[in-house]
Structure formats: structure tokens, C-alpha cells
Length: 66
Image (cartoon, rainbow, N blue to C red):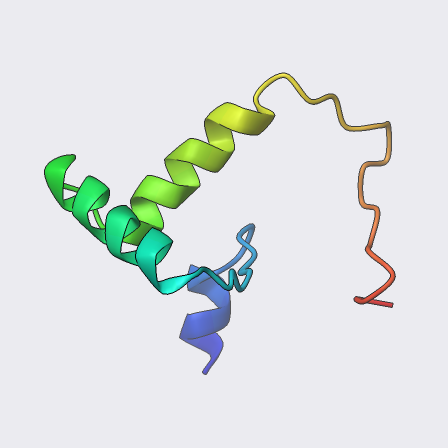
């Protein structure tokens, strides 16, 4: 269990609910790029937020996390 915590240090998981047709297209696109769906989505999200500035002390939590 401790090894799992170390492996995920600095990483967060999210759950994304997609319509079946979008999921299918995502799977195909990731395969065409020779990537896993997870790696493909991470790359797309990284590109989408690259210019976002995080406020100082950027350890903000969402309301859901409490």
C-alpha cells in the first residue's frame, strides 16, 4: 500500500463520464497516436491549461474535496 502512495505522489486522479460515441472516438484517436487513452487525455489537458496561472500558495481545494 505504501508503494502505491509513493507512485502517485504529485499526481491526482479524476473521473470523466463520456458518451459512448465520444469514448469510442477517443479510444481510436489514442490508438492512432500510439498512446493509451489516459496518456492522450493527460496530454490534451496539459496543453489546454499550459497558460493558466495558479495563484500564490496554489494549494486550493475544491468544495467537494472539503
